[in-house]
Amino acid sequence: MADKRKKAASAAKLAKDKMACNKPRRTPSHPTKSHVVKACKGGEEKIIRFGQQGVEGAGKNPQSAKDKARRKSYYARHNAQDANPDIMSARYWSHKTKW
Image (cartoon, rainbow, N blue to C red; front, side):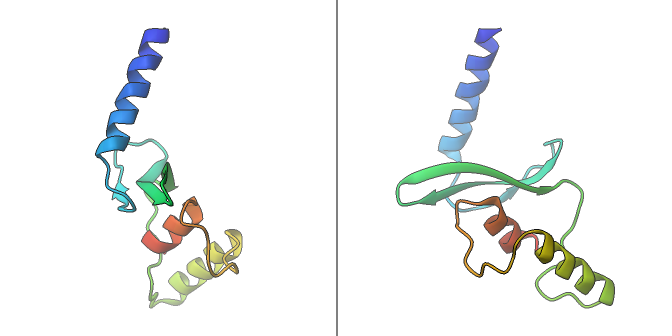
């Protein structure tokens, strides 16, 4: 059992080493999260998974009233009044990539 965990940890570490900093990518095979990014800031690295699998954001310029309402509701739920979320947070990447 411990061997499996060690192998999984080393595989994850290799994947982290191969990922480019601050470049989000889709994760279609992940059961719950739609995107992953290796966030880098000041020599610190962090793997962040974000976004609900199967849900599309309303985009930067929503056209329909329904999409405008979805975007407004999303921002209200996720404390969007903070104009400068930290780059090391899932909220930052979700706002930038999906909404």
